[in-house]
Image 1 (cartoon, helix red, strand yellow):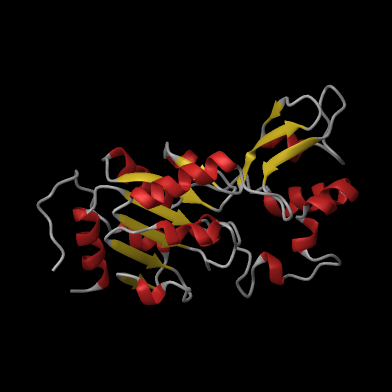
Image 2: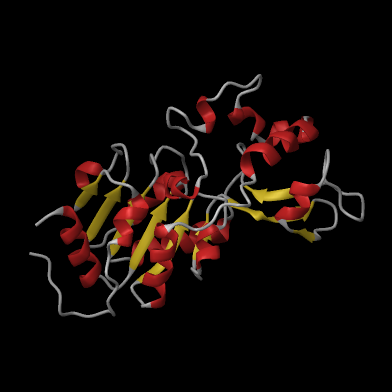
Length: 249
């Protein structure tokens, strides 16, 4: 039995799948990841991207922050790929209970997924730090310099910068979903970004599946490890209704 057949049997048997994804999920939509050889963090800048994407830099060098943010973080032309679409289908058929993502691109929601826990926020939500008024991503993209609200306050993207904490409610919901899952699929993440990566330790279900280009810290404890493209792998899955008929052997 090959890996695709094993994954199909796992999906068939599962009733509460949770998908935990990172930047590698969106690379097939044309959005670069961060830590690969040609990723964002390995490109040459006068100031390291990790510094630019910090709370301190946002406060002290707000205009330079937005210059970088518009150029590198707003990929508004990107479309959901096969992975996003298959996960939305799994949710519609009652197989997948939640998506937990480290991505901020909003592609899971665009694909039709309803229960998405965005650990690091979303570029599509932006708020005035003074009055709280909401602005979409297009407003940020088409603004110049520091985007300002009608009240003159600075508009800040609802993304978690370095030095900032994750949203407590989002974390609680994500941990609950993972702890209640019978299958956890981890894909497109190096599992090196904490505290998000630490959430996988709450999984105590039957099947842990890794779909990732490189090895991770939890490969040795996984039911199935696949070093394949995520979209192509998930697209092969035939989504059936929840049933107790299937067993892994």
